[in-house]
Image 1 (cartoon, rainbow, N blue to C red):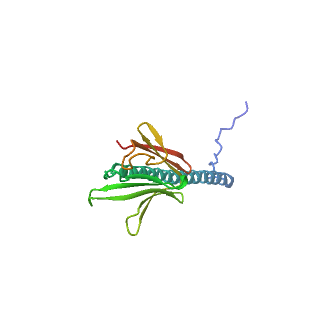
Image 2: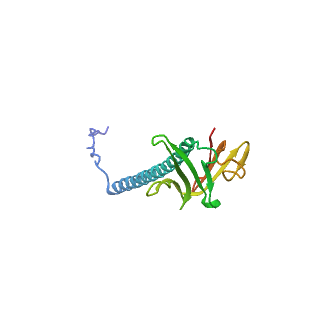
Image 3: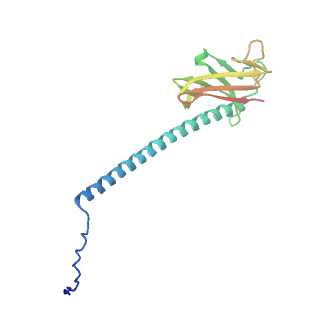
Length: 190
């Protein structure tokens, strides 16, 4: 019988450690794509945050404007009969709501006006020198007032044939805002 050679294990070549150049380039490309996608996602989130903050500020300004108007309406003065406390005058697209407000601090009545001018809702104090103007809201396309009195709606105040010192039961304010549309608020006075 033939003689067998003893089995000698072959020397095992150690596996190459590290990556080939192609593998390295593929890994870099994958990380570059992931980085670009991450950057784009963060940029979009940042843009969205700025947009939401802008919208929040706009809504907050509108709420402040409505609150300011309502606050002044609740402080309407009670003048002697025949004196106008509340009036709406001017052409339909430039109406001015004027009220006499009871200034308890100064113990006197002062006129306050709300008007739509240059796409802004303004609150003015015509008796102040110089006239004080406060911008309540920007981006206002239209401003409209309606009055309800004894179950009837009026688009002007005071209605003809009534005591000018008489007040309506409620006032409806409609503000048409760019990008939002018309917003309506009904403010009861009694």
